[in-house]
Image 1 (spheres, rainbow, N blue to C red):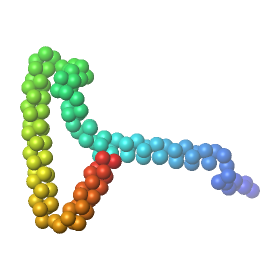
Image 2 (cartoon, rainbow, N blue to C red):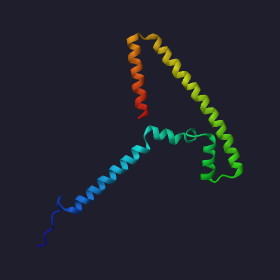
Image 3 (cartoon, rainbow, N blue to C red):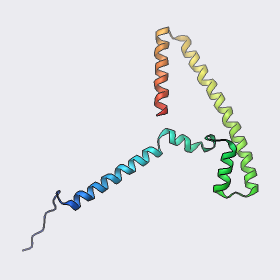
Image 4 (cartoon, rainbow, N blue to C red):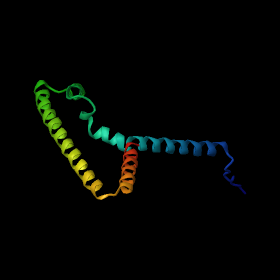
Length: 128
C-alpha cells in the first residue's frame, strides 16, 4: 500500500510560492494604478503640452528618427496643435467662468460659501 503525503500549509515551499505570487500581484497592481492615475493619463495623452513645442519636436525627431522633410511637416502640425489647444483651453476657461458666475448669482451668501467649498473639494480630488 502506498500512502500519499498530504500537502501541508506549513510546507515552506508552499508558503514561499504563495508569498511570491502575492508580491507579484501587489507589484502589478501598484504599477497599473500608477500608470492609470488621472494625472499620469493626462501627461501621457498630452506630451506636447508638458514642454515647449521645440522640446517636443526635438524629442519626436530623435526618438522617431525623422527625416528633414518629416521634421518640417511635424513642426507645422505641432504649430497647428498648439494654436488649436490654446484656443480650446481659453474657450473652456470662459465656459467654466461663465457657468460659475451664473450659479453664484442665484445663491445666497451661505450657499455661495458652501458652493466654494464644494468646488475646492472637487478640484482637490482632481489633483490627487
